[in-house]
Amino acid sequence: MTASGIFMAAGSHLASVAATSIVLALGAGSLYIAQSSYFALSADFGKGSAGSLSGFMNMGAQAGSAVTAITTQAIAAHYGWTAAYLTSAVFCVAGGGLWLLINPDCVLESR
Image (cartoon, rainbow, N blue to C red; front, side, top):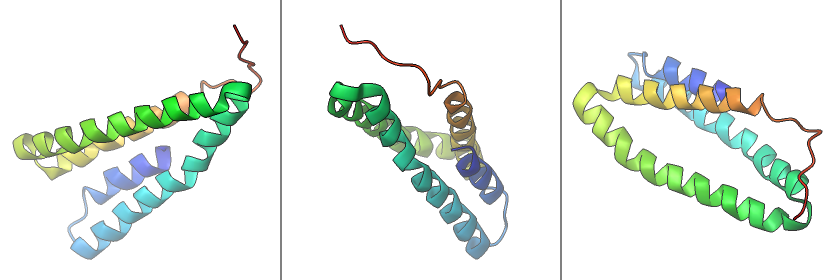
């Protein structure tokens, strides 16, 4: 996620449309490369409830996508596309930082 944010921030400052397209595509690609780790983590943490945890995680991702579709256009309309991409980059870097707080040795207890 951090790499995606870096690519998005870099892509928002390029003058060439072709270069911008390539850098933003690298950002999207780096985000999708990390996607398998999200589901692996939910399977590891969820154990017997891995399906429910994966579904909850996926629901959160879809809700975030819906909010992104609305807010990106609003930010771009008021402040420009550079600000919209930089806002997304900040959230990507913050999300990548939050991954550092996950303790892989932590075991969730059943109730």
